[in-house]
Image 1 (cartoon, rainbow, N blue to C red):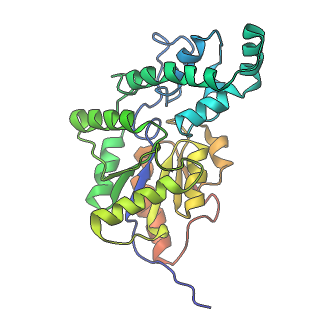
Image 2 (image 1 turned 30 degrees about the horizontal axis):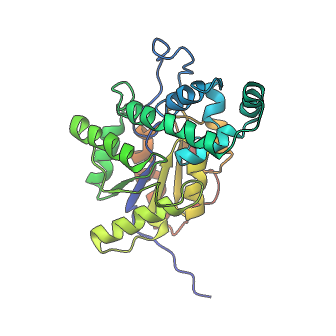
Length: 281
């Protein structure tokens, strides 16, 4: 039986946004008393504030549970949490309905647009600028996938480019492409890379980098290499390890080292991604 083996280099790196290359960990309790010190606060704060407008209190740990999903999907999952349902029915004497979902989503949208470009949050994680520069110097296309609305994602990427000279080669649109844990945002970046270069990039030549379990599952479902970031974003080591990435590292700072010293030597030997956790830093 014919079995093709790719033995080339990494051609495309697809990165999540908050907790992956910006909006890293730090103590912001002077602004948000419930701050848990973890990265990826930009989606948490507007969810918390929007839901609170309707008299419902969710802690940050609960809000983080669906992290990585497209934001309307994320909200729907929050509204189905037992602690949300119990509070809602106690306050309104009825189950929540679609009009309620749309009302909370409408409150969330302007808050998300506000916080995604907040100067405390729209800031690269330590080593992110250098990591992306090293990948580009090696001829790797750098893509961005995210659960943000396209308008908000574009606003954040403009801030990163204008202030920090961080520019992505390809960007996917979560409003048009099914999101994590499905593989399609990675495939969309691969399609955009093809349109940019007129070169087909095989799955083995792609690496997905994310701070969420949903992101690792997205990469696994796409058949690409996966690198989980356990100290810079929303999900911790155990949550990421359970999603079976190829590599686990603290932050994006270590990604070039993993690509050049771990993944590419394996590719030269004809190895493929998706064999379970290989390496941890």
